[in-house]
Image (cartoon, rainbow, N blue to C red):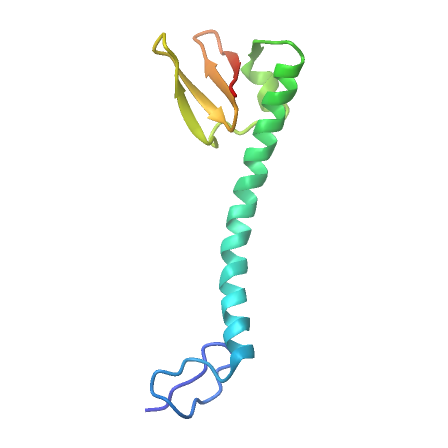
Length: 115
């Protein structure tokens, strides 16, 4: 049975568990795999960073409440966040790193800056 390199698809000779022709093919193959994963993570990190920046800007403006539509216009994506924060009063804030928010019944977004 013929075996072929996972990167360049050349026929392999030698050990039966060999997967690559040489170190260059092994590196090329692993770099391709890593770059595909990195692209996915990079896109999510861009969204999270934009969300954090938007929350930071609104908090730095001295606001503790902002309309949901304003955040949407600034490109805030409510589908992405890093964690939840439970307050002593039992409210659950959705957080993007150290900034959190809670959407009330009037579509106002209550802002919280953690440490």
